[in-house]
Image (cartoon, rainbow, N blue to C red; front, side, top):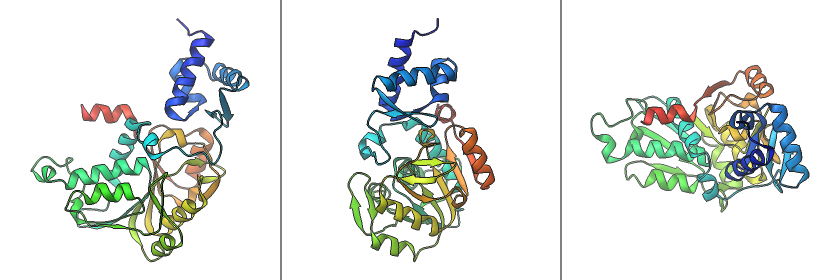
Length: 287
């Protein structure tokens, strides 16, 4: 039986509270209604002050291009999607004979760090316990990060050597920022960098709310031969205040759902390899 408008509105607001942003297509699939119905619902909810419409979807009322949630809040959101993305990302680590990796701050990149740390733990050294050869010997990787939480997780294994880039630490993200961080990155050239972003859009590229963090992310792009963006689908089609790179700066995009048509076309034109890692697929593999 189709949901009545008040029921749909309640589900939309519940999903928005949990995810932070929603897309029209996401809601149409979830509610099993047409995109036109979703758009009408969003218009009504915006008129009531319950949310704010953006291109292709909606964000929480009061959200702006500088809105940032705390690290703890973001860790609890879309965790299944982030784990699926991290599982796909390990395929882009350097080969077993060693290599160098830079990991950007962020909760999706942190999910990748969790996998690297698990691969280096004593229990993973038992034959047959490694991820079926998907991960190289984590101990052979030169690891660099701008994120204090990621550095802590990697170094706590006791077997990984991790370089933490110095600078001023932003409390809301745990990321090192500032001139010292940017200058240090200018003297690094890793095999691969795993990046995070607050938004990726066909016409604005990659963006984040903070100018200092944007400067570091731009330096990260220049500090590696291969650039891999890890981003859950709630960020697709979104923009924040400060642009730090274009689609042409990426080699690979790993996400959990197909990008919107405009973004998909722009990514193809920029020759970005798009990898879709659905969360339900990851759950099936873990079962």
